[in-house]
Image (cartoon, rainbow, N blue to C red; front, side, top):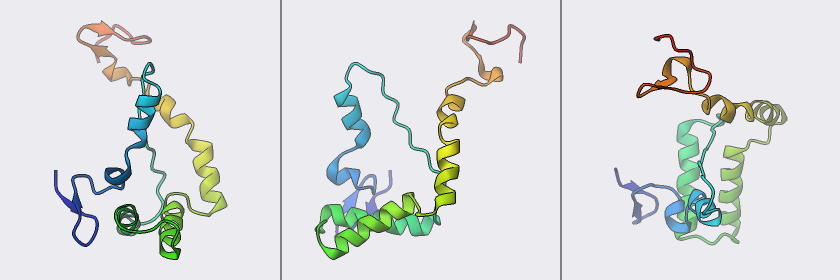
Length: 129
């Protein structure tokens, strides 16, 4: 993995704020130890990669060196939230309307992948692909 510079002199292996404060998926696994947890992030597309990277790097700096309650800290958090969740009603409606179908689609094996190690999954035909 490549080292990512997240501040004036700080480096991490991930380049994300989780290095400073912890992963949400780790919390979910610990909180629901008896459950099978599949962390899933769905990107609906917002700003350019360069702009989102700038906002995440700024957030990393805030976690490592800044003060959340400061004016700059609040601006960084607001910019990050608006990068992931634009204040655009039509964008939000599209995401809300289409997002629930994605997990259902990815959890169903494609017909041509339904035979694994000689076993057939539910709904698979016995014909060769």
